[in-house]
Image 1 (cartoon, rainbow, N blue to C red):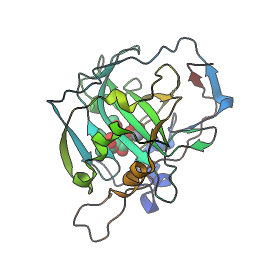
Image 2 (cartoon, rainbow, N blue to C red):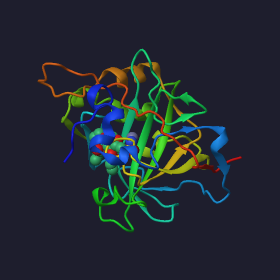
Image 3 (tube, rainbow, N blue to C red):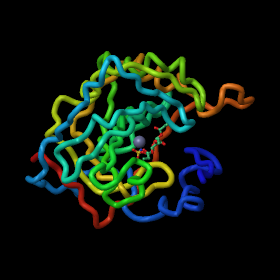
Image 4 (tube, rainbow, N blue to C red):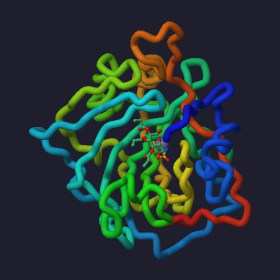
Length: 263
Ligand code: SG5
Ligand code: ZN
């Protein structure tokens, strides 16, 4: 079912559409969020999160799938301020490399940030699980958190301290809970909103995107750890491939508008 894809070479993003036609289709993400396409929308309410403070006695799985680093999230965690309940499924990251540490997917007025955190949720009012929801127009809601270079962020260490255990593709490690709210910016009322897609194959146009206006900061040491710790390949692979630059280029956005919750 899942044909090989990558961010470079003969399986790179310009070839995705051959095996995954939606990648050449409509409503694609990410985009450059620039001033000319913004439209203030007074109906955009502050994002409200429930259950983001994960239990210290429960275990969650961090895994490397060869494209990113993911942490599974429990169904007790959801967004309550959208027209449907969107229940959390997983979080993952996109980043650049040590020499070009600009690896966010969304950019703002042409400026790419260092990295980007995605918290993927599915419409649990209408669909039983994320796999069923992921190709439905109202199936997914992803929160995008831009990451810039700055001061040390202790909460990200809950994930980053596991790098050594998931260096290679298909490795997994259980971790105990922490407060995922702490990975988000302080202000949850200022954000960009548009209808888009998964940023990786199969690129389904099923995502209600929320990208927060304010970035969070990681220290240089934390960014370098993210950029150098992981591999796209399995442990015994004779030609190891570093997991870097796992972001897609901005997609065309003619006719579409990004709604903004702030003036
Ligand atoms: C990453 O981005 C995720 C995908 C995610 C896509 O490739 O990969 C990881 O987190 C590494 C394990 O997540 C999975 O494959 C887990 C099932 O795809 C989905 O979330 C499908 C529902 C695309 O997500 S994104 O548009 O937010 N970037
Ligand atoms: Zn993503």
